[in-house]
Length: 392
Image (cartoon, rainbow, N blue to C red; front, side, top):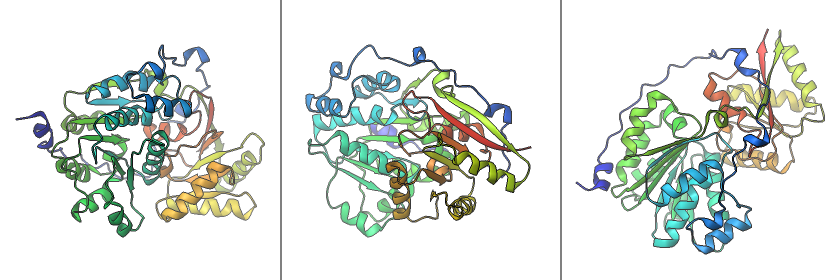
């Protein structure tokens, strides 16, 4: 049996769903930490992108975008991926994981010019849109095409989009599966699969969708999984997806948020909690702030309370329409609104430069959730600040 058929025949073992709980397992002691990462600790590659075995047109575009040296995850995975090795990449958000898988995919598309060539599956709409945007930016002028399919949009528009062949397809699991069931999306000849933020997809219960998607890729020969965290209970499913993978995990310091100053804000009543928040937001150094609440109702309520006292804030959560989510994120990125209130849908896939502070208005459920949230600040080696409200 060929390697590609052996992969396509694998059936992913279902994970047990995590019991729902509204109580955090985090100790407040874990939420207090001084920023300890020094400039000397930052990774500096010994080579430049000009030295990689890449198409000259791609190198030129990377240089225009300011890609001079690879980040650590890029330096340690691009060569492996160019050689079609399956990779399990674990690295903190903001370390360049998207470039790590897009650059070798683009290189191979330029070499083989096949449509469709790669499928990139992600857990959230925002992340899908961001990856599609990054692909278009890196491939500007190269006549390469991508399509993005996400929930919350008109499926008829997607069906129309699929009439135009694309080199890569980016999407969320349920919308992709819906298109497959409509017999509009044919993945039989797609060579390469990327699961980005795969731990989140498995944790959200997308295992059945992923199983259907991988089963539809009859000629899948290359797979890569990237995320910021790795749970041992997910390893059996990961082993079913990857073929003789190489694991690339950045050092502990790079994945624990040492470059982010972390502290707690104690409160006794909900009124005091809100007053403390408004005092913080009125300080000059709180320039571009991302606030997390645990529920959609909580986000909506908090955003309304802030707006009532003339602190302008926008919100993102699962009940907002896709157009509303895009506008809120765009306004936040452009600085039209300095405060974004969100559920954990924003913990993955929001690529906003210069977020000055992350505030956890509710204590995250667990440490992985906490790390993903605070990873929105202090990106690209810069120091950030994170605060968590804790009942006294």
